[in-house]
Image 1 (cartoon, rainbow, N blue to C red):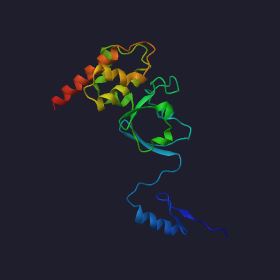
Image 2 (tube, helix red, strand yellow):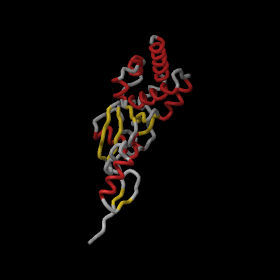
Image 3 (cartoon, rainbow, N blue to C red):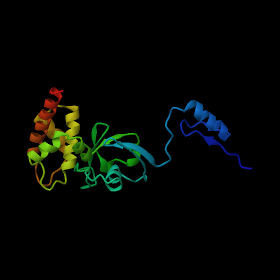
Image 4 (cartoon, rainbow, N blue to C red):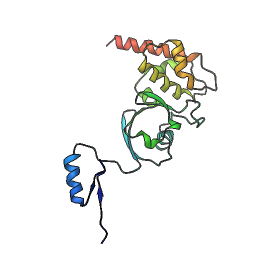
Length: 195
């Protein structure tokens, strides 16, 4: 008869009997959440928790855009060169086309939809200052700009230009972005001062 061994999914300890594994898990790991099956990720997107089965080759962009239906992260270059797929992960702007979904377990992600739903002034100032023509690149610019303002609430124009350096706009709206971001920063400071 074949002998079975049982591996603890939390710590990797091996047990001869399933009952021993069960007792170990209940005593040593009872406060920990259940481990996810292979290929499952838990991530929070725009404040909503998702548990999703992903394939190893899926990018974060594919998961967010094609599987979850949040269409703001765009696929333009698919090479990490244009910034159209930018999302914010744990406070940092990242290129979702260059990030594997399987690596994002436990992370917090913001997209342009979440930024708009939260009433962030960037959306209003981007419209006011005509920062878009075709609009394809706009969500990537807005997520990059929000990450900048979260880190630096009063950026200089040169800091804004540097932060947006990885975002491309085929329509050439570059001069308008610093104006919109600086006005949004002013609006955020006024909100904070009014609290």
